[in-house]
View (cartoon, rainbow, N blue to C red):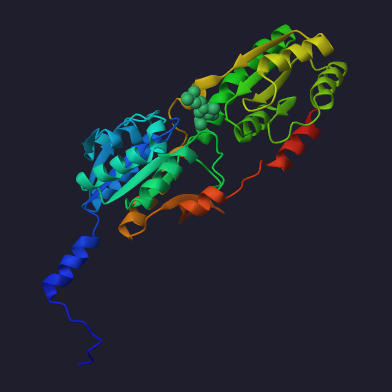
Length: 342
Ligand code: F6P
């Protein structure tokens, strides 16, 4: 027998395999909530339990990890969650995660609770928290849940489609009253610093103009002229979509329209209504795919990964790499919408 070979007794080998085995998974939702987060909790819980893994639901995001605030999740606890908006685990933006002392406490609590892997669902702030915990030895897998679709490493974030549809339903109703009064409606859509949501919503409602931070365009040409020529061509009402990250507020846009065109104008800030409601089929299916993939990644011994959608495929990539990606707005769609606004 070559002396480079190390022989282990069967029991030792079994112990090593046991050591690698995932016995308990933690799941948390963090940052702004998004429709479909509950469906992720369901997918993670059911997939884990089906594989003999226990699940701890961490309450209030990373704050719950720091404060040891959790509950055991059973298969029955997640019944009826596919269609439920919000997150049953609650969510929070946790400032303490910027402090190394609290981060260490969160990692120590994971060890204390016997958590072999943690699934973190949220936006880029959530990913940064997971990256820090991974560095402290907690295997973390991220799933992107945000209505903004602004996570650069993935083509899609859970909640986006539902938020688009919520905004579209509201704006279709606005159109009725704007038409009746021959008015202009300036509607603010969420999206933080990005215009992905505003663009998708604006395109879907046939807005006269879509104002986004990534491409401020020319106000005179893209808004004022569109309204003027629209009126000349027989259009009696106009919908202008403004992303919340645009450099002018909804009110400033409306004031300028009145000043330049004299058209009676009203503003609507859709706000947090966009974050609620039952997820669409797309968000439910995506939550199932990404939630299951997160558990499978942990079972395969992976850590510090993000589950992403790329070219219609669900894959996992390193969090570090994911945070460095860039994602541009669909400028082609914006240009097409601008050209069609006549
Ligand atoms: O990230 C989701 C989001 O809804 C953004 O679109 C918005 O800017 C922000 O969260 C609002 O955050 P809060 O709920 O803390 O007001």
